[in-house]
Length: 267
Ligand code: MG
Ligand code: MG
Image 1 (tube, protein in one colour):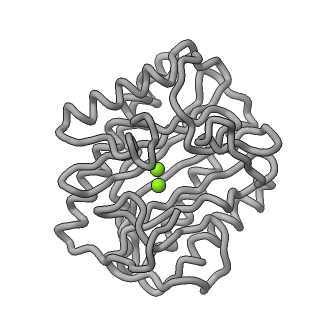
Image 2 (spheres, protein in one colour):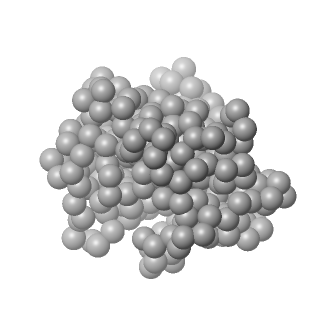
Image 3 (cartoon, helix red, strand yellow):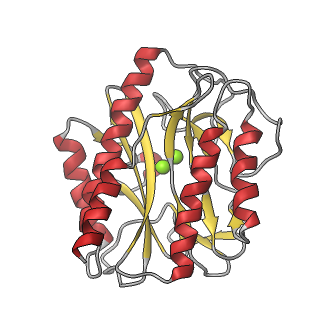
């Protein structure tokens, strides 16, 4: 993935357009959340997402991107990211990372959430919680005066401290009129290293954390990234704009988590 070198600082108007796209991604993921259960296929969920996005005047951001065939990247269990939806039913105990992009008003939104299918093991549940927490810790570093390395350091220190593997070959990125812009946002790094964070930089921060080792490989489908040791991986992603004192999170898990809470109380 070549991002080019130029970081494009966004105007306030551009940030609001990216927010609209990012919020539509969250609402799309909530539609998916409502339907994740044993027996459903990732292709069925992909169709729901595509219709929802188009019904809201946007285009799926990933479909056709680099030749990717679908609306959602759906990565089950040992798949880390870039999984292609298929007709294999999800099973109780699976986890599925759902990564969604939309293009609306010429700006992209890009966010991901990892869902539990039915009941998962305590070990896998803890991995998902920790990956989401590593994203929150990373977002706390996305302020003026910090550097890209501070974001990666926050993820790495927390996740490795719990004994998890932090994927290094795939990274977060700038976001705007391009799905992937400079700078790269690794999930590892050293404090005080890397490009300076500037007011108006929009970043997609997306830790990919493995239950086992950090090593990955690519499936023979040419897309799906999988863990080398076959253990489960989790992935959460938010779009944020760097500001003074506190990052402004443009995407939202609120709708998703309302759906999940409702499902839990009905169980
Ligand atoms: Mg994404
Ligand atoms: Mg991304």
